[in-house]
Image (tube, rainbow, N blue to C red; front, top):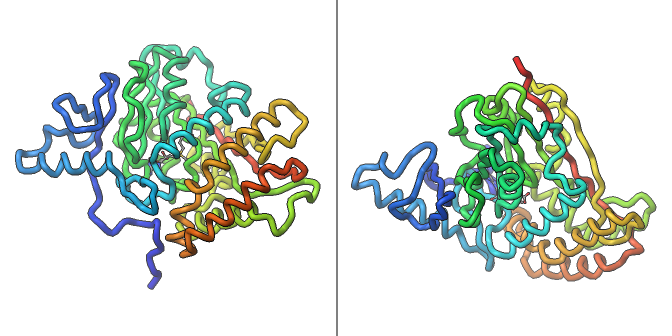
Amino acid sequence: MASTPPLLLKTKAKVTATATLTTTKGNSLLPSPQLHVIFGLTAHSYGASETGSFISVLSSVRNGVRENGRLYPSYGKYEYGLPMDESELDRNQLQHHKFTLLLNHRLYLAPIPDSVLEQPGSRVLDMGTGNGVWAIDMADKFPHAEIIGNDIAAVQPSFVPPNCIFEIEDVEEDWPYPRQYFDFIHGREFLYAIRDWPRLISQAHNALRPGGWIQLASSYPLLRSDDDTLPPNSALLEITDSFIEISEKAGASVHALREWKHQLTDAGFINVADVVLKIPMNGWPKDDLLRQVGELEEWMLRDGMESLMLRGWTQVLHRPAEDLALYIALAKKELRDTSVHSYIFFHITYGQRPWS
Ligand SMILES: C[S@@+](CC[C@H](N)C(=O)[O-])C[C@H]1O[C@@H](n2cnc3c(N)ncnc32)[C@H](O)[C@@H]1O
C-alpha cells in the first residue's frame, strides 16, 4: 500500500465553509455581524448549535498553523508548502513588480480586448491571489469589471477598490461559481499548489463565458546557463533541484506546466499559446529590462528562499532546517556573482473558450 507523503491530503476533517472574509466594505477577518458569505454555506445556514463551529472555522482559517517559526494556511484539502506570513506577502509584492516589468507593464498576455473587461457586468477570477495585488491592479484598471481573488489563506487587505472581492476557496475542490460566469480566469505562481491540473482546467472551462480566456503563468525553477558559467556544485542549483524533488514527492510537480498547453487543448480551449520568457538570477544581462528583472529575482530569492523551501525541506525531504540555512547562506553569496549567467524560464499559457 502506498504510504501517504507529507504535504498531501490532510487526515483531519476537512473545512467545508466557503466564506468571503474580506469584502469591499472592509470587514475584518474576525467573524462579525457584517461577515458576508457569497457562495456555499452562509453563517445563516448554520443552526444555533453550529454557529460556534462556523466561528472556529473562521478563526482557524485566519490564524493558520505555526511551524518552524513560519505561519502556514490551515484551510484546504492539501497542506500547502509556502507560508502566509508578512514576509511571504512581501515576497508576493516583489514578485508582482518583477512579473509586470517582465511583461512590459502588462498584467497578462492573453489577447482579451480591453473593451470586454471595460463592460459593466464583466468578471475576472484570480486563483490563488496571495496578497491580492494582481486583483487590485486589475480592479483599478477595469473599474466596471468585478474582480474576484480567491485563496486558501485569508491574507488579503481590507482597503481595496470597490469592485475587488476576496474569497476563501480551495480551487482543488468543486468550484462554487455558476457556469459561464467569468470573462477571464487567471492563475499565477501556484504551480507547487495544484495536484490535479486537468480537473482545475475543466472547472475553469465550465466557469468561463463563451469567448472567455484563461491564463496560467509560473516560474519553472530549472536553473540553467547557456555558457557553462553555472558550476555543477552550486548551492543555488542544489536548492532549486531540491525544490523540484519536493514538488514531485508532494504530488504537485513543477514540471506540470509543460502539460498546460495540451491540457487546455484537451479541455476544449482554442487559440492556445505558450509564451516562455527568461528570468535571470541577478543583474548579469546587458539588456536593461532583463537586468532589472534579474535584480528583482536576486532580491526576491535573498529574502524568499526560506519561504520557498523550509516546509518541504523538513517535512518531505526530512532534512534538518540547519542544513537549509547553510545552503541558503552559500546560495546568497553566489547570487551576488554576476559572472555566473544563470536563469530560469517563466511560462505563460493561455487559451480561449470557443464561442459555441
Ligand atoms: C506563491 S503564491 C502566488 C500569489 C499570487 N498569485 C501572485 O502571483 O503573487 C500562491 C498562492 O496560492 C494559494 N493557494 C495554494 N493552494 C491553493 C488552493 N488549492 N486554492 C486556492 N489558493 C491556493 C496560496 O495560499 C498562495 O497565496
